[in-house]
Image 1 (cartoon, rainbow, N blue to C red):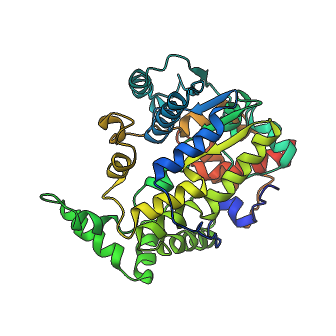
Image 2: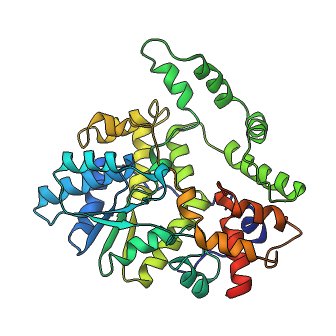
Length: 376
């Protein structure tokens, strides 16, 4: 399996758009819990078997499910491995982690402290860049560091949970149909937008689009149209939307890349919630209307594994300031603007972004491209 080579526009925009026709595995589909348990059982016998555990909903559910299967089958418990960011308070989730570990009765864990190691130009990323050139996704360093701890075994992650369990196009209508009591007025407007024709939904996506200020205006417009087309292509039926979202090119190619990097380290890398059998079972269970939201989905599928407050939490850690660190700043200060396509991007604006307090994550690929032009 090779690594995906991004085209110039994908590099400039920091994103891989579009969908490839990936066939849905044929039914009948078992329940998501049975599919997940069988998937975990296939890996829990390896040593080491590590579970990437941030304390977020997806990683917490994955750890709880893996611990449950291990205890049922008399297997060694999986070991949670956590990244700790002492200099990035927005990434702190220690209270949630402790609550989940207490609930599960887990004492053994691995904690890796992160300072500037995960910088896109740091000591974890640059050997990969020199070996392979640009890869998708560019923020592979945290996962590579986790995989190094799992050499000879398996790293299980909850990546793919947003795609499998997140909101769908039809969710506002589902909230109305399954409402209990009063719903907020915004749900009606969201339902109208969800049911609108593709052309109107595309227009709405363009109005609320993410802007990439480092691109020349015509390039930014072109990529914004691609982003809007992706949004407008979402199927209305919840199950179809689940499969479509989980198998879109950016997600599928990302998984393939990290599996290749894992194989180089003698690690089996598994995104449990992105595995086709699991996604297909969630899609089949969701049917036409799905659930009324992310919390309802997690309760419906995993309500017996974790306390309700964990499954329903609304907060999420932020990692941007924990990623663009010393190596990025040092490179940006001395960068002469070379190595990027000036027909597509403005180097001076890029430099300002990389030196700012809140760099844009999609500019990461350009940062690595510029670094490779100088040092690769």
